[in-house]
Each structure stands twice: as C-alpha cells, then as structure tokens.
Image 1 (cartoon, rainbow, N blue to C red):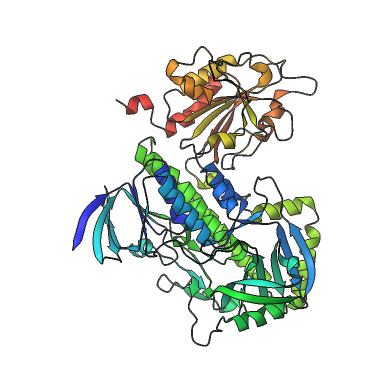
Image 2: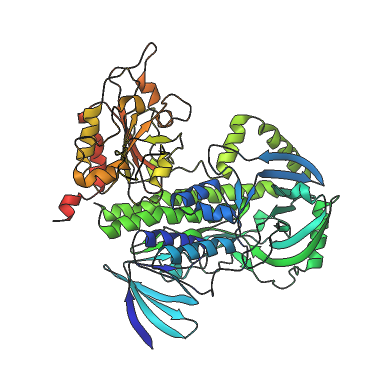
Length: 628
C-alpha cells in the first residue's frame, strides 16, 4: 500500500555530511524539504575525518563553524618519516582564519548538521527511509520511498530531486543517461581508529604523520577527537591508515557504471583481518624505534579506491552532489570538502529559482555543472598524482623526492602555494567555465575568486540614543561577518578615498536608489574621513531605515596591507606618484551567496554605475515587476 503523496520543494536522497549541509541551507532559506537515508541515524563511525580551511569558511558563512570548532581537533601540520627517521615537517598557516586542518569525525559532523537542522528549522531527517525510484516531467518529480521500519511506501512530489547518496547513488542509477565511468584500483587499503599510548607518542600528537618503510608502502596516523557516542574526554584516539597490498596503478582496471566498489568494504577472500594483533604489528613496522601500544580497537575497515566522475551534474530536475557525482583517492582529505562545496554552490541557485528572483532560471541551474565539473576533474587528477608520488616503487627516488620537496618548502612562495592547494584556498571559479559571472576591470579582484578577508569596517549609521538604548560600543565587522547567513547576492559600492579627494555622495545616493527594487543585499563602504554624520542620509526612506543601519560602513584606514580598499584592488587608483587623485573611482563589487565574487568594476561617475548595475539587473527579477 502506498501512502498519501507529500508535496515539498526539494527531495534529497542521502543524509551524510553533504546531503545534510545542502538540506540545512535550503531549510534555512524557508524551503520545504524531504531528506531521507537508509541508516537509523548519524553514523557511529569516524569515516571522513578532516575539513579544509575552505570548508570551515563555508560553515562560518552559514553560522555553523562554532559547532565544528567545539568538537574538533586542530592539526597544525604534516610530518614525513622514512625508516623511523623524520625527513621533514610542514606547518600550516596562511591567509585564512582557519589555518589548521580541522580533524572531526564524520559521526560528529553528521550529528552536528542533523541536530542544527532540527533545532533551527521545521525540517528533520527521515532515517531508515530510502529512495526506491523516481520519475520526473516538465513540472515536477515524484519519488517513491520505503520506510524500512514499517515496510510502507509513500510518494513524495517535489520541484527538484538531489542525489547526495554516495558513489552508489540511487538518484544517478535511476537515470540511464547518467554514467559513472573511471578506474577501480586493485590495491587493498585499510583504516582503523585505535587508542594509542607509549614512549614517543607525543612525536605524533600534533600533526598528520606520513610514514614509509620501503618502496610502495605508506602508513599514516593522526589524532582524532573522541566520537560523540564515546563517553571519554581524552586525545588518545588515533586514526591510522595505509595500503595492505602494493600500490600498482598500472593494474587499475577501466570500469563502467555498473561495478562501483568505492569506499568501505567488508573483508573479501584472503584479505587481511584487521584484528588488534595485526594492527599492533602494522604499527610496530612503521613506527619503530618508537614503542607505541595499540589499546582499544574502536573501529576498522578496509576500503577501495575508485576514480570516477559522472557525465554531467544535472538531468532536468535531478542533480548530483558529492560522491554521487565524483569519487577519488582520499589523498589530502579533499573528497568531503569537495562535496560540501558542491552543496554550497547548488543550494543558493535552487533557492533563487524557487523564490522566483532569477531572471533566467535555466541559465542559473546549468551554471552548477559548468562551475563544479572542472573543479572535480582537477581534483581527481591531483589526488591521482599524489597517490603515484606517495607510493613510488623506487625507494631512492622516493627519498630524494621527499628531501627535495621539503627543501623547496623553505621558499615562502612555494610554501604558500602548497598550503593553499592543501587547504583548497586556491579554488576559484574559472570565468570561462561559468555562464553567470560578470566583468571586471584590470587591477581589481577577479570574478570567480573567493571574497578576500580584510580588516573590519566600522558601522556608519548610529541612531541617536533614546531612553535606555545607548550606543556603548563601536561595531566593527568584515564583509564576511556582515554577510553571514545572508541568503541574497550582495551588491556593494566601495567608495573609499583619501580625505583630500572630492566627495562621491551623488554616486552613493544613485547606487542606493537604483538598487532599491532589486532582490539583493545592498552595502555601502566609505572612508571614515568622508562620512560627515553618523545618521541616515536624507534619501533613505522610512521603511529602509532598519536595513540602512546594517548597510552603511566606514573604513578607518584604506592604505594598510589588509584594508578592504587594498584587497579589492582599489587602492592604486586613489593616488598618483605625488598626491591623491581628486576624482578617484569607486568599485561596484557583486558577491554571490556562496562568497564568490561575480563582478568587480570601476565606477567613476553615475553613468559608470548604471552600466555596472546592468549585470545585476540582467540576473534578477525586479521586485516591483514581480509583485504585479
């Protein structure tokens, strides 16, 4: 018997970290969702256990970073060992608030996201419920789901369906037009979570450790935070991982869509049983001369590696995110973070379409595949190359390469390059691969780059205190702070300049008035020396005053290395060799809800402003016309 049909905005198959993050964003934007998973609840296993700096920046933008920091361990770098000797050390640190590698078990990640979904929205996860099938037409998707507890099937009607259901995705398999071709490695890998103690354990406690003992053999270990279901408060738990059989990429088989075996697998045939005794011997082999003891074995599994990518992320009303769209070696811990970025890219686009604010819904939805597919391809290549380098079969070559690499890392430019790649801070959207990015002027920050961080801005409008309400504190925030939880694209006029320059108040007034009817977040940034009064300008309408108080900001210093003026590229345009430019330009900066820059253009006058705003007008439905 099939129960009554439920109607919602978006159906999501899979409640792992990627599906939960996607669901949370849609629900926070006010959309109705149905998210289901065959599991009885968040996984009890650590599984994917690291988050890059870029992932933490995304979580901060959604108001989630604090939860993850509270339940994570911060790894400060990497150590590489060969035959028991330390070859080199690389400590993290760069242009981000999250310089560490954030170590947090998948169990904690799923628990945080599912808990926040229920606490912050009217939605919840339908556990022990799985997708059976779905059909779609020009207007809707109808999915059939099975409640494993009751054995009852039900229909769920939605506008869109999203597959976040892993490398064996049901959403993908239900559409024969989707393929998932690639290669399947024959090498057997294993990972385990164990409690460790012993002489020398402190050598491994603060960083990710990569150890080798002979050619084509790599072993890794990193300290974990305790799992949420373990009533312990110590840091003796470590994740260890490595290959059980020789790595031989030449033996990898080309594989079609039907035999995906990526991820955790049960022991097969003559596969090594992951007993505590075996793990102790494995540990002894790689960590000698240190005398480490494996205590409690918390969890262990073998896993296999496939390198695959789907032939497109969208099929009409169906979309794929995370491992459902791409899978690869866990080298670098990039897989989960790549999936979280998929979710972040797609969520705001589907939301804008559902809200009816996009002028060209098809163009916006198609941009998901155009922007994310090339990034997945490059990640697959990078992780494959990393595997080949790590598992070189020539011991001398491997030793020389490692020593040379650490020598190169002493050069700051090389070190920064490696760090940004490892933390995914280098990820940008290539304008050639996107259909929705705008223009930029030479010298300014480019479309497709992540919004740079900068020194805080001072809130500009301070209403006169009345009664018990007093302006006791000066509020300072960065653009990232201001835009946390913002669901709209931000359109920002940056009109900072030196005090001797002419006023640009006419352009600011024009900006505010012309953006009044657009469904965007408006911001104005001026130099503090050019803001004469901390009050609402006369052109602010009565119903805009509350919005304006959170829209006008001052920059206290424009010429510091981390000023917003410098970070967006405006500073060189404000002065010449001898003095300040009298009529310098401002910048119209457009920032998407996922914090990637859409447009950056110089604005010298009102005509330039109107020309630059045309991009925004072409992207969004005018609020006045949409209400008719």
